[in-house]
Length: 384
Image 1 (cartoon, rainbow, N blue to C red):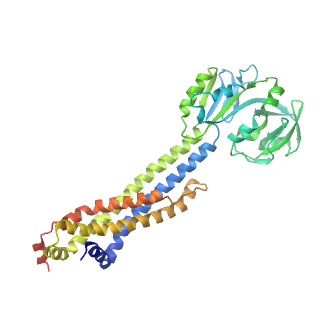
Image 2: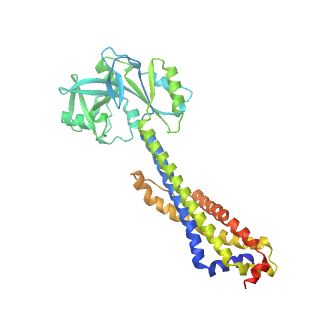
Image 3: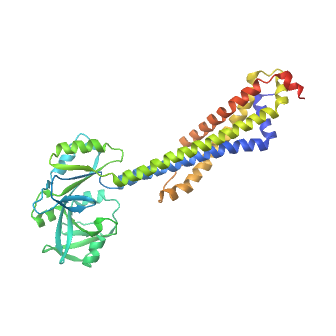
């Protein structure tokens, strides 16, 4: 009789024990797959959010009298303030790591009189600004002319304007191209206008208050870019903006560590179930093993019977654990991330689940199989 056929026979005859062993492995593998899939999906979502977060760097003039604030960044007071040059934005792209830079968005900020109300105007290059601010949602159309502006939600309420409305800023006529839907930030209180029109309005041609820089990816060498930018712009203060991204990354890291701890504990329980079940199986099958040894089976043949059994169980548990785990991750990931997070059916994860099931199964069953192979056939036959 073939060893594989004997192993299959044993699994069929002991359905309860076989199911118990398979469930022990399946639950452990499913837990690991779920945790890995959830944390991987959350990390991918984090990478996407960081890339959409906006600027990685903020560059402002070095100055002592600071009073204006934009996006949490304090800027020089316009009265006698230092400015950066608009052409400094082009210098940033010449740094050694310039290929990592996606958007360079210069800005000019100043308080203005808009329809007899005191507000803050921001001069921007709209194509660059709209590329950097991917989270912006406009009610209206993108500005196409120098005299068109985007008005923040709160500023729009104060001015009582809508898309297409005219407004007067420092005595000059502008038209509202769009209202910015609420962002929950200082942008809601601002008026965004064309940079060159704003420079002419304020009488500071070629000057900017700050430059925002977005790298292509969250893993780009931000610290190196900071140092290189500071070198080419010695009169500027270069700051890496990481607070929100870093806080979320820390949360994901903590969740990952916690998940790995839980996964390790669940796998340990699964391995213990396999070990105890195999030990009990050895005790139950003492007579069977004695017969095998008496008819010429060697120690390695006995071990192969047990290893074939655990091989079949591990393959089944690994495949089923992958299916159950990925399905569980698809249900859990959106709830944990608080957003629509995609979990893929990854063949690499499937292969990893099966390999992990095999490692746990063989690791937990090696000692019971070895013990079975070392049973004295004479002693085993006495129990008949």
